[in-house]
Image 1 (cartoon, rainbow, N blue to C red):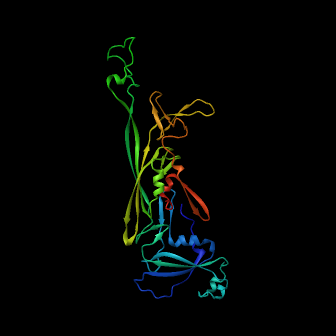
Image 2: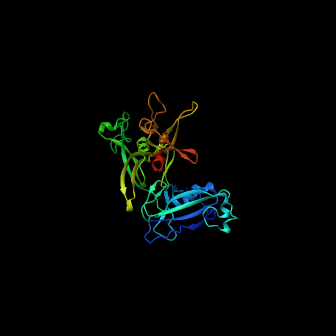
Image 3: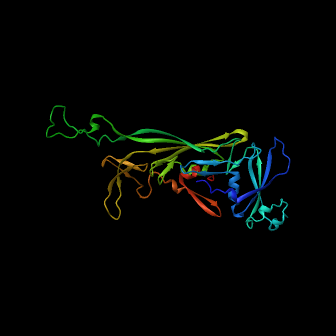
Amino acid sequence: MPEPALLSTEYVEWNESTEETAIDSQSATRTFLLYDDAKRALFEQRFLGYVYLDALNYWKIEYPVVHPVRKWLRASAVSWQNREEDYRQGDTGIPYDPALAQAPLANGAIATVTYTRAPWKVAGYDTGENPDVRDLINAEFKNTSRNLTLPNDRYVWSTQGKVGTAPGADSTPILLAQDGVQAYITIPTQSITVIRFMAPDFPVNAISQLQNRVNEKEYSILNKKYAPETLKLLDAEMVDALGPNGWRGWTIRYTFEAILTYDDVIVAGTGGAAPTKSTTYVGWNRLFDPSRNIWDYVNLLNNSSRKIFKSDTEVKQTFATSGASEDVKGFDLLFDPRAY
């Protein structure tokens, strides 16, 4: 979600730089008073921009603000000076303003915002000269299918005998194998390519550790929800991209495959209870058992908790945030600008 906004009433501009600036100037500065020193980070986000994840799971960019007069310049840096206690007497070198003398300045700070030409850097993303707020990822979805071959020595023809002739009392089932016929079922799948633009780097460790893993919990890609264990990361492709005005970054293409078979599955009983049958998405970790005509989990002989594919959330990276720490797990690491 977007970062909390800094209200325009929480800061005020003192004066713009008195230095004469030519029309082709490469920089300019403005000076502000921030009433609450604790909101420096919000002030910097307001002017320098930031990246956030919106309600639909799209990565968005809020770009640096444009200079109000020199429209070819955008905010690129903020420097800070603690507000002097004797400001109200005008002793800080900044013109005294009686209207501000009554403002709640006990915890204030002075900010100098520098504006320059492109390229700018926004929360780890180098950008082009005239960017708009835009999505940082898009995706391609393609529904496909594959055939699952069934053992033809376990299936028989349902109707015995010739057409028009009643089967004899001693009729025995005819296996498909006897007639050289192969049975199969069709598995619906979906190929998903997620393209991430303007990445400052690619998370090489996260990619290598997440390949061939499946989603432990329901996971969304551009608001499309995938049931647990149905989504698997196949591979990633990274391309070094050179944009306008020297912008340089990475375009990353992640390829996922989803198993979308919805069928009967075995549900293990708890506390000694017998297994039951349910209908759900079978996912990557169940196999079809033709002897029971149902899907079931399989595991290692000597480790009942080890399934075919491991869970994505077993991969974790920790980041420092506002004096605390934040754990990011699983496929979310593929889209987090801080991931490595």
